[in-house]
Image (tube, rainbow, N blue to C red):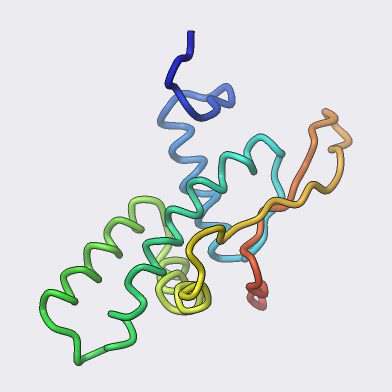
Length: 140
């Protein structure tokens, strides 16, 4: 029985799932919108929202810049280290604490949304977009 065990296994072992979520969150932060299966999209929102929260939570400290106290700088470093556990590239991390964090500073949560799109031709898997709410995708 799976009592009190949340989350989908998706036919992967734990390390493979962690790598999957890390890569998908990084892609979402980099591109603003990604397409994946519905099951992965539903589960991804949990990890993406938590990671985005780290960028949003320290925006007042980022805005202070050089005027931040040592305690503020320590909180900023802590938030970056926690987000770095999930985000795999420096560019995505910089975008999280710059553009994305400042965009969502007035929201209390719900940073991502899932839009059902199509059925994949090869295996008839239901597909969906996962995107950040109200944020335009960067020019790639």
